[in-house]
Length: 368
Image: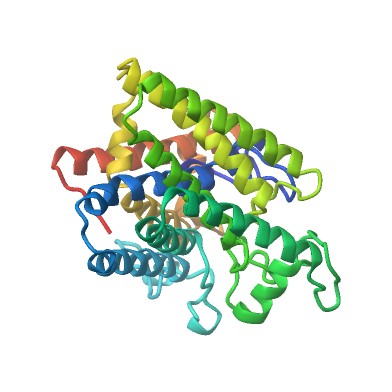
């Protein structure tokens, strides 16, 4: 997510590092559902022992609600940052200007962390109160409800069965409830909107089910086989379903949720085989370092990225941002525009890694 969110220039990005323009998918469209899927796996690992020890679910509510609220609040923080003037950092005050002054009346409410928060809340409660079969039924039900409503609810002025950009049931709900508080790029709909969260919850629930599979007292190779067959089946059904319900990340369609859950299951299965069964450790540590402070590095990267745009100064009669200066000075002098853009993004990822490596070495793990 850090890599694709921080190119040197949005005008020069390799296609796989961009989201699909509307229907379809790219490598970038794997990232968010993979994260939600592993959130579901983590829910199982976090609460299974407590559930086994018969700790009443209500005793875990404070922790779940606290984590949900913190994630949601962090998402709102990123949506509104900076709420104040950026510190001068040795640059004259008149060279620092906000691109868009903060206004709480038009602040975006949905977002990536907000969706993670809601999915975590619902998936956690279903895991604590329901068995595996009921969890699976809810995962399927959320997808079918989404499809049925999108397909057959007559949206005023649009009709039923539309999946056009900004002209569908999901966008209509967002306009009714979140008018003026949606993504500034789209304005009339939000990629993390209200109704499209239903199949996103299914994505997290498929992770919950996978986590319980991993905890079964079964031979590792049998677990792997189930994961690969299950993942392949989900991919096949999701792809087939896409002929009637397009795979679409911005709408988080049910076909997208199922297809990406299958992809995540296969990738996790391969990782399980290489790391847990075969004991392969080469190249694993960086992922552990990132994973131990995943939310921290995501929020930190968002803050730093905004500061790189907000800090500006005059040079040769033109205003240049700190980000533009860095790209021009360190990358465009020896790389083509698209490779300079990629090199900047990779450098951003590497510097973020160094920050997390410092926390890891100090055994500082910031949990929410």
